[in-house]
Structure formats: C-alpha cells, structure tokens
Image: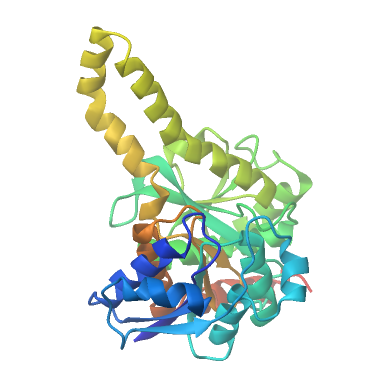
Length: 347
C-alpha cells in the first residue's frame, strides 16, 4: 500500500473536485492510501457528502493555502504550516511516499525544494508534461510524448539539459513502459551545431551517454508529429510550446461550433469529421494524463492541472503511486551515475 499526500486546496475548481477524486480512489482496488491535506473546517463537510473508505483516506489539517494570486516564496516563508508545505513534509517524514497538488505550481516546486533532497548530479528540478502526437509511443500505443522542462526554469545550462534528458528518459520508461525512449533536444535545426551554446554542448554530451537513446535535435514541427518520446528544452520555451498545444483542442472545438451554426453543407462535413475531431479532443485532454511530474527530487512530486476535475485528480494520484511503485527516483539515480562518472554533472 502506497500513501499519497494530496494538497486539497488551491485548485481552480476548489476542494470539492479534489475531495470527490480522492474518495473515488479510496473505493477502488488500487493499493493506495490518501492523506488529504487542507482546511478541516472546509474538507470535513465535503467528505460527509461523499462515499469513501475511511481506512484508505485520512485528513491532515492545514488552515492556509497558497492561492494562484500569492507570491509563492513570500507566502511559504510567512506560512510554514500551509497545505502544500505540510503535504510535502508528510512525505519527507515518511508518512507518505508522494505528493500531489493542483494548486500554485511555484509553491509546489518551492515546497519540494525545502522538504526534499535533489538527486545526485541534479542541479535544477524540471517540470515535465505530456503533449499530444500523431505517432503513438510505447507498448500501450500512447498518443502523446513527454516534454521537459515546461516551467520550472527560465534558462538551462548544458548540464541542466543533460539532467533533463536523463530524468525524462527515466519517467518514460517507468510510466509509459517504453524500454528505450528516444530522447531529443528541441532546437532550430537537426544539425549538431544548431541551437544555443547550451544546446550544442548538451548535444555533444548526450551523444556519449550510454544510458540515453539520443536522437539528436528536433525542430518545433517534430513535436506534434511525435518523432521522439522525450523532448528536452529550457523551461521558458517549453512552457510557451505546452500552452500552445493545450489551446489546440479549444480552437478546434470553437471553429467547429461556429462552422456548424453557419451552413448546412458545413454541418454535413463536420458530421463526417466528427470522429476525427473527437480523437483530437481526446489526445489533448490533460485530464487523462494524470498531471505533470516535478523531476529531480528523491521523492515523487506530481503537479495536477489547475483546472483538475475529480477524474484528473484520480489519475494524478494513480500516476504518483505508479512512479513510487516502479522506483522512479532510483531509475533517475542510475541514469545520473554515468553523468557523474563522466564528469559532466554540475558541482
């Protein structure tokens, strides 16, 4: 049985969605226990409206939480007993093995930085996320690939990019069951000399990494095609790309809705294309993916989408359990051991 600490506060849909999601988990066969962290005065009445297994779900009280409008560092410094810090502390103390939050992303990363230890050779943590692709990946034919960093960093050195590649490869192996994931650097050309100095240097280092199935550089057009399993980039660029991809399904839906209301022939055409449109919406539905991992720490950290509904919370908790059960941190340690041995790890 694996215990997951879930920060119930701070999501766009409120604690109601989180409570419903974890109550659903408690009734399922998966070997998961949940520590629900948040304001007891708010969460207790919500729990009373749900059906759940009390042996699989417990409440840990934290009266304050970091909202999306708060400045994470200032808030956490002033409120050391807030929900995201308590959830992370429960993991650090061994009362849980993973933390999940759909609240403020910066606060979650800072809380993990305060409570957990970075893995050997990892200088900076990375936020990873899946993105929809034309090509399927892994033995389960998943229609998405992994990209990192997508928001934990603004810039990245060559050493950071190598670490991101190791972490992304490990995550794809553990979660997607891809035995030898194809990993590439996002650049402005496929040639080894293309890109920033950090990308060029990381390219040279990854060519010699015997634990990474390195495919070289990919360009932006390769991302939706899914030519590789893991795309590595600095956080600023990754965040811009991810937000653009998230908007694809919404744009398609809006265009289709507008077209359907205009002309009979367009209605006929859209009816014929309805299955394809449905597939696009499914591919870009972040609720199915189970949240974005914050990689680089000695414990599992999952950032669920701010708009997470009960289904998304359920999937995020299940992904956290899977990452713990399959030894994600140990897999990253193995990958970084070669980097350290080669002398490529940062001080």
